[in-house]
Length: 395
Image (cartoon, rainbow, N blue to C red; front, side, top):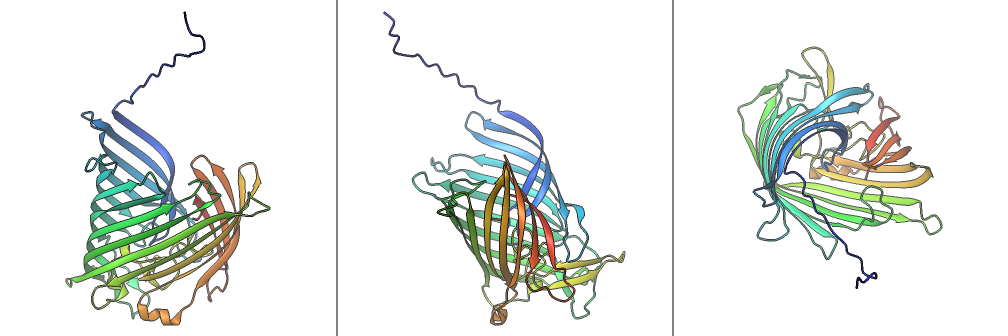
C-alpha cells in the first residue's frame, strides 16, 4: 500500500549554458584605498566560457567605458567625464592545489584620467592572484604578483609656479608582491547594521620610472624599492533604545617605506601615492584635492590642478545613519584626515576636517547617496564646502 505520510521529492538541475554574452549598464565603485573610492556609471560588454572542458575553469573578455559627473577641482564646475575605459581578459582556475582557493590570471589595458587617476594615463597590467575564504571563521585573504606599466599621456602643460620643474612621472614599470588579510563580521555587506571589518593591505614593490620634465619625458631613470601598507578598521553599532540607528566609524592609516634614501615625492610613481578628499574620504573637499597641488596651464590655455599626493596617510570618519521613511536614510557625518609627503612633514602634524549631512536611497545594488560637507577651516580662496554623489555608503 502507498504510504501517504511520505512525499516523493524530485530535484531537476539544469546547468547554465557555458558560453555567454552580456551587455549591461550599472553603477561602478572604484575601491582604491590610495586614490580614494570613486563612483562611476559603467557600460559593460562582455563574453566568456564558464566551464572549459567540463572542469569549471572559466575565461572572459570585457570592455567597460566608465563615466563620472562631479567636481574634480576646488571651486571648479561640475562636468560629465569619461575617466576610464578598460579592456580585460581573465582566466580563473577554481581549485589551486586541490583546495577551494581560486586562482585568477588577468591581463588588462586601461585609459584613465581624473578623478580615477590624477592625470591622464594608460596602464597595461598582468597579474596572478589567489584568494581564499575560511569556512570556519570570518577570515579571508588575497595575494599575488603583478606587473604594471604606466604611461603618462603627453601634454605641454606649463607650471604656474616657476619653482616646479618635475611635474609628474613620464612612465613607470612596477613589479609587486601583495598580501591582504581581512576579517569581515558585518551582518550585511550592502546595508550594514552591526559588526566590523579589519583589513591589512601590504605590497612589496620595485618601480623604475622616467620622470617628465616640463611636459617632456626625460632620459634619467629613477629606481626605487618600497614597502607599502594600509591598515583599516571599520565598526558598525546600534543604540540600545534606537536599534535602527547605526553609528559607523572608520580609521585608516597608510605608509610607504622606501628601502634606501627617500626620493622626492614627484619622482615617486603617481599610481602608488596616497590621495585624500572627496565623496568617500573627507567630504567637503573636491576629489583628491587635500594636500599640495601643482597648478598648470595647457597649450590651449586651460588651467588645471594636479594633486601631488603623499607617502603617509591618516583618515578618520564617524557617521550616524538614521532611517527616515520607506527606503530613505539620513546621514550626519564628520570626516578628518590628511596626507604627508615625507616622514619629516609629520612633525608639523595637522588635519583637514569636514562635517555635513546627506540622504541615501536604498536600492538592490546598494545605497545611492547625496551628501553635502562643510569644511571646518577653509583656507583663503577655498569654497565653504562641496556636494557629493556616491554609490554605497562612504564606508
